[in-house]
Image (cartoon, rainbow, N blue to C red):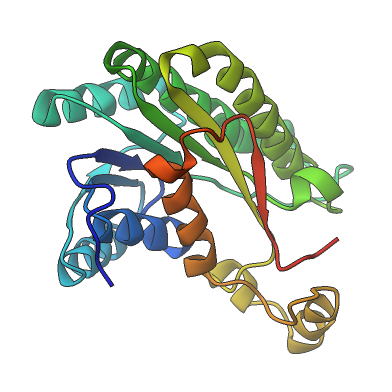
Length: 249
């Protein structure tokens, strides 16, 4: 179902070629936004997302950008401003995992996850803050994770990056709120994507038992919340972490 609640808005979605990022890009485009989304290594998946956006009646374009590269992020946002003259919505979804128990984790595995998941999001926030503050409107939405709050063995790097992202969200909300720019985070629980497909069935069943709603989430469940936070309806919501986890404690 399409609507025009985001008509005239320009949105950037990082890591938009697959999974949750793809669902978000399609959802924002379906609501009328002009969407630019990034990918790193899979042009075919990016093309599939472009196609899905067009089929949903929206407008979307893929741009290759590694958010761990600060200069590349600056160039990406400059390009969007040159083409569209504004940027209204930024969704920091790009993320990587390098899971390993801390006794085996290499420093470079820690650094790589922080560089993409935390510093990459910071680079995007920094690049979009100026135009958003200038136009006195903006929506920044950061994708955190259930592990930021509960922790997870073998994910000290990933959990640290997401915990940092939530702290960044709260600080930035205070910093630029007076210019009508909201900054929020969405923390998905266990979502049915490529990352959970490899879980053995017994492990998946065990997970579902812990979720009051009795199922894994879908990428669409997350995308709907992001769309709300991007809309005028969420104009008085900022500095928040919205948990989309089916009631998982």
